[in-house]
Image 1 (tube, helix red, strand yellow):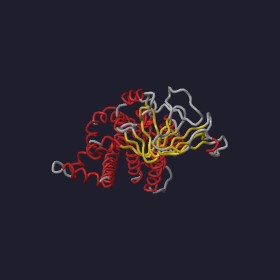
Image 2 (cartoon, one colour):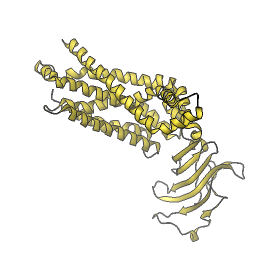
Image 3 (cartoon, helix red, strand yellow):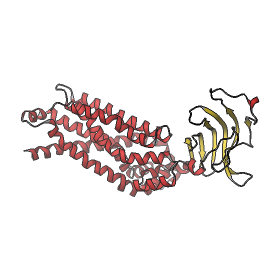
Length: 388
């Protein structure tokens, strides 16, 4: 009887999971395709008559399906599990199983078994399938972006001295910062500003001593005392305004300069954002890139997320199931609505933490693990309150 029950629950789940996966991924593809429709039309016109818009879309999204599956796998699994429980509730089968002495935990145990198996599929997708498709994914992306990969906007970097760089536009090949460049230095062991340089341009160039440094031009230098007040320029021994000659940032191997000079270890290699495609390589390859680019916060966050993200399947399942298992008389769709809200909250916190990690506002480990640490105890507490 027990084996028959397990097969029945697994069969219901696989059907619900399959429908949820197709619907959710199809919905995501349609929404993204509409948001990038202009890019597809422009690319199709450029490549005409070899490609049409629909052909480009098909080529672009076919190779990206494993990425969509990876990102939305926890949500798909939760929705599939919710509809499975909804089916059992609708026909009063859960009530009959309780009356027969079968606990709710025993009834839904096949769902946790399937969660473990699907998590294994997720890891295989992460480590094997997506890395194998990187080249076609890159080719499809290049068709749409073209030369835009040379230009990166809104960069936020921090060097080992604690200096912060905010760059509006960065040209990779020219090794040039443009539009707005803000470099902030702080007093030791403090969050108080000591110096701030605002410039229109920054260029990596060879100086008179033969060494290459960052030279900022067309800007102004501000100095602050420990109270946070601007020091009047008349008290300085340097000119706060600078033009084409620029303001030179000291290298890491330079001797310490005056109070009005900022020292940094950042080079053009550190300024260049990590190719987003590289973030989909296997964990072993990401670790190799991390050793080559140790100051890349984006790669460090990605590495930690590779370990933490598969656990999202368990976390979301434990968060969502209590709302469709508990409370007689509660509408299944009300429970599903609550679960969707929780799922959105989890993804929202995850995305926020990732962004803060990429901006060095959170440590890479915290950016990856904080959503799990925040939501898992709540899921355990809710699950423990389910009437068996």
